[in-house]
View (cartoon, rainbow, N blue to C red):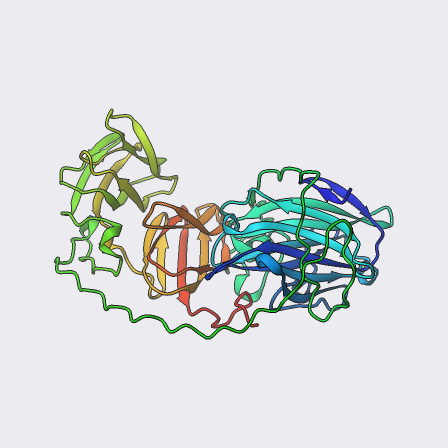
Length: 470
């Protein structure tokens, strides 16, 4: 039995293998899925930058692991192929971790994702593991080949990450120069990261027919394991580049600039569509200790910005209230001292907006339209929870997280769509540097942290270790 579920393992002969990361995608705008492998030692860490095999570094120096390329099959089946030769793996390598990353979306949008290992000599199936319950993950640790009693075994893992391939690789101690810890990082060991777990994949039905992907480019054609017949592979015909339709210039807003909270300068209008949130007069309320905020202006339904400032050191939480004056949705929580944070409320518009604040100190809460949010078109520095408007084309962002007062803490970015759905963009525990891709706007970027941070947009493919060069 070579089909296994999460947590299962199989013995292997140690012969050279070809490993396919297979998925099915059809239609325009399909997501790009990439296979990768990490070679890790007995401590579960890579030994250096060369121990990652991925789209920008397709072969390991010892030639034991290499990417063979992508092949297309019938019915939209696509496979990225790796070649693994255990006989060429250095003795200091204990495990070969195989993963997949998704560019431009999440694995919840990928159909029929599975990993298949076959003999390089005969094509006999050695292992098959299917992922069926992926949701918001942008990278998945599919499985690992590991040494056991002078031989090799395969284990199905299925661990998901919301921070893409960089976050998954960092879990194994991988770093590149632009992701080294910031200058004031302590010498204490890094806390364990918090990867997003996938639920266990159910076992495949006994009569399931799994599509066999194409053989990797340039590989000798080998027979598929019975009883599954190999599909006839055809290379896609090159398609002409579509000419984009002209885009209408945005109509400038006629409203005057909104007043800023806490006595700051007026806000300029951003490029978010008017459907993202209503326009309404600026509102502010102050208090001391636990209290209720009654927003005494008429606000139609839609997203609104809520700014919170609290003096001193105290746990702070802001919660919306429902029509029965009971706690509804938590908008913001923080342990930061002299906290200044920003969040988004999804207002139903059926009654005045009401919120409860929990704190021991003096506070000020303001409410304003999302059209007044700062736009991500240049470097932005902040401290604590925040919201940024992303209205432009796809971009990469360089991230620096300085940590909370203890020098660590969570840094997370989610992208909020107009329909209320969230996309995971970036997640890291501990201070340091990283990067992440952003799909085309409009989006509201929700930042959750208690520490200082910097976000810098840069053109897609403009450089950097993780930017695709092929």
